[in-house]
Length: 95
View 1 (cartoon, rainbow, N blue to C red):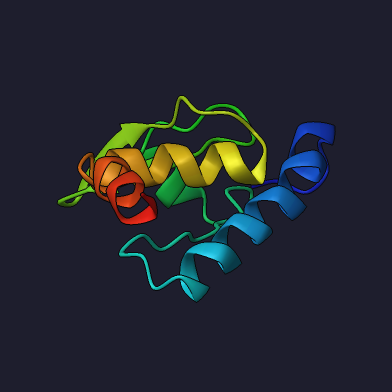
View 2: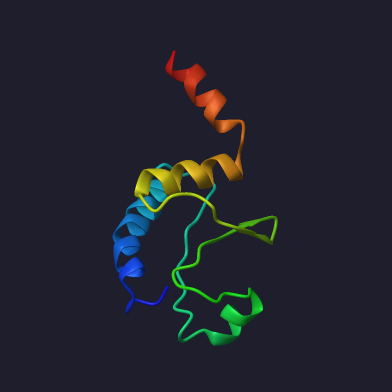
């Protein structure tokens, strides 16, 4: 993420909150952050052209992130992608 742009500034606190939530709930998803203006080789490797770009890795393969920009949308998207059964189980537990 490049901190100079407006979209990155808006996303940063939401992303940080989502990362904290996932860590606290011991979900198998970890969020990481890379400044592609510094890590240019990494950005090139994954074909990153715009900021911010979110990539989701499943079994080492990158998937383009297509979710929203709020904490809840990020959590919902990564949880669904990492374990599609989670949502079902969660609602059964809540019943």
